[in-house]
Amino acid sequence: GVNLRGRSFLKLLDFTPQEIEYLIDLSINFKNMKMNGVPHKYLTGKNIVLLFEKTSTRTRCSFEVAGYDLGCGVTYLDPGSSQMGKKESIEDTARVLGRMYDGIEYRGFDQDLVQELADKSGVPVWNGLTDEFHPTQMIADLMTIKENFPQGLKGLKLTYMGDARNNMGNSLMVACAKMGMNFTACGPKELWPAEDLVETCKQIAAETGGSVTLTDDVDEGTKGANVIYTDIWVSMGEPDSVWEERIKLLSPYQVTTKVMDNAADDAIFMHCLPSFHDLQTTIGQDIYEKFGLKEMEVADEVFESKRSRVFDEAENRMHSIKAVIYATLK
Ligand code: CP
Ligand code: NVA
Picture 1: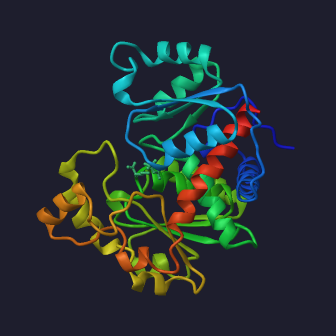
Picture 2: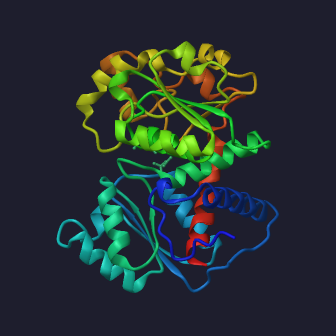
């Protein structure tokens, strides 16, 4: 059987398809327990710390609720409230936190930093998003896909529209390759994933029966897809100055009803959130005033449609993060 005790969860590339499937199924079990009111304080007496160098709603709340449900003590540290990176190195921070906590969640910039925390702290470290990867999101997403396609993940076509060079594009390409799915990145060549990662994923896909396709053709890229996925056009940590170019490059790749109609009959729409499906936020209003757009990566009518699974996906973050914490700390 699969045993992930003591392991860090930094990127899906570190895990076998069997291990990933185990985490998906464990997430579904935890969801059932929660729905049926079955208590599961399996980690009473353990403590976890959540370090965030970028903002968050879903990931932070998922780790907190999952931790409480499992019986853990939970500490949240935002970038302003610890010494890390300012007065104290990552290495020293890791060694201190490793003395007090049983597990550490980290959201930040470089993948190297989360790796260093894992190397130096001596306890499991969970990547809550870096510039390169967002692995806990992948377990929630694969779980959501499995809920909608109970026959299994193998052979399903997932098309990711938009900025395929960001953490979501990278992570979905790896996740699909690992699970024997057919991944298509549909966007401008400038925003295709890095060649070495594409090569790695193609090799993985060759073993699992999946595939990796890159295309700038919307019609071809989305045809027959079971899942249409997109993400925000500018990610956390990128300067505001890139909006203009991204809007120019990515406007043709907006997920519209026409795109959904070109996908399979049973196609679902997914998005990790937060989303600019309408611009009713402060940043959204700035963009509206500057560029005159009303919606960005996804049309509001798709986001609000029957095919949209975005809030199931958000809920599933909590169940799947619970599975990751439990599997690595049990
Ligand atoms: N999807 C996701 O990671 O959302 P947050 O940035 O709100 O955590
Ligand atoms: N690509 C987005 C994902 C947010 C969950 C970002 O990094 O901001």
